[in-house]
Image (cartoon, rainbow, N blue to C red; front, side, top):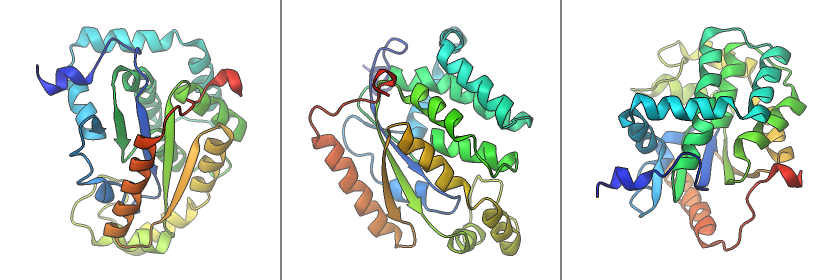
Length: 248
């Protein structure tokens, strides 16, 4: 049977282990995850995205409809849109994709390593909307709902705006809205959003997520080695308690 067919199961029936990287653009999230996917049962964001694109419209529609009937989740989304507020079309589109992702992740088995995940999507939304004061209690409820029942480790790549700006300006390819801008403009925009990562990580911790922090100023090879250690520790852990809204 094709490996991609083995990757998925009935909608929402599985509880994969999630390792999600988070940090400023230019922190090196995608770079340090390269080469980590030779292990059986470990899947990348690009892999599960590829499987999603091959699913039928009926499957995708069923997944989205089921998520819409998750009243706790939809209440969190509405509260975030109202309190933030979220108005930009791109931001609303990212929230819609999060809604689909919530059950899609639960249709996979094994270990999923996300170089960009839910926290990064929230960072992008707040950045796009030029929001500096985050609705902490709303974020906490949203993250608890999104990750309910999953075993999650957040790996924050901590890098100062100056370092991130240099890396973004010097890289040949990139998909962030900061790529191809003058270095000083990139730095100015990152400094304006400097408080966002700390606020999002605060909400993640209060939501009960495990957060590990790596020094992003280190060489990518060293960061990749430290990330591999975290992955090994999680793989060896026995009886890890998934996040549950009922215990909060």
